[in-house]
Image 1: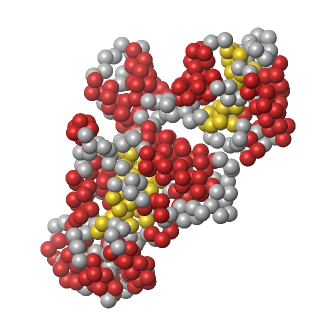
Image 2: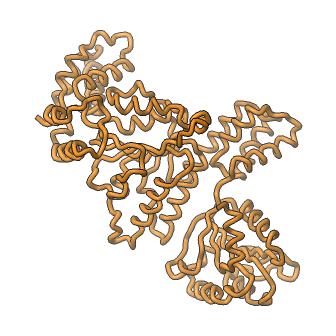
Image 3: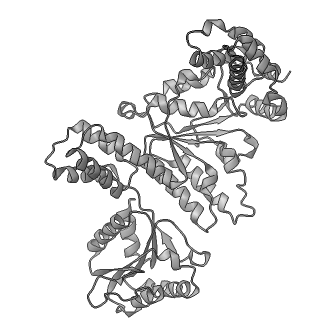
Length: 504
């Protein structure tokens, strides 16, 4: 059910208080007016704190700088006279006891009248005493047809005829932006060049990055890492490569569903985050990083609002990769103790979306401590697959050394004994191998020469790998995998030998 259908249904059902969280005030008001026109016999009244009501000469300025008077105005309209009352930024006054009480009084009265109060605000801020009388209706970002119509309207003034390819590229790049931002960036491009050009796609993408940064929840990551940058993890890489074209129209025609996502489990430094970046690059999809901790806020309802905003933005940008780093830390307190159940509600919203999402948002979640994850997260249907990313074996360490040294010394790779390096660094993770090479470079640089194999071995001798300090965690993970809870990311089917080689 889209916004128009849901909103119209609420008007017909005489829902007295409706809350629409959106930054697109103008677009939301147009959508409200369209729904109201279809019902007929209902006037639309709009109030804001600075100007009061402005829709009728008889009401001009009424309720100016007086939110309580704005509500009293609603009672002055005859009972049988329909009305939709839009209150801009009214969330700022909901904590006032007089305003809160009057809203609850109105909620009783308006149930039997063709009147509805609509609060439009950038985010949800509802005091606990009003949660039972206010209904929140999400207002989605512009759809593909809306964006296409707006771009065509803008270019009509220039007399330019866009090619179908450029129009599609502009529409795709603009997904996830508000109409106001789309207008702003395209008007800027037209003012500069007199028309729209292929290079303007990058302008839109930069506007999108800026928009995402301003949410302070998601980060737009440039994905430059490649699958070849991952040393080892052959099972995982094969799984990913088989799904390279899974988001295409050919895959839909074949009958394939959109891939849902991956959960990567393992200790720190084993390449889980690198894998997320490499997937985005290989599949040519935008990469969004979500810090789950940013979802939680102090105000009642704000955490849930941020969760809905995150889901809405990810779906608007689809197809895309949503990378959730260290998801185990974000949902460790899912029992809700001490936070009035906020964590449980956010978690419930999130896993329901994971199971039911229809849009092509591929979720890559990483976790270090599987014991912190709620069991619901691990059930089938949340992710396509759960992979265990363990410590690299000797062959994988050799591949990891080659990857790093090939980037740093591509012409002198033969000077390094990678086989010996892999043999001499048991239990080292990929991140520890990288740090070892960096330390060796410091040794060589300080002596005004290039670093050598011996420098790397000397640096390695000074590092205590995490495998020794996190032995209990590794043992638990290995037993968990041995019980059939996850697939091995590496091509090694003899798990017992792997446990022994890592923990001796």
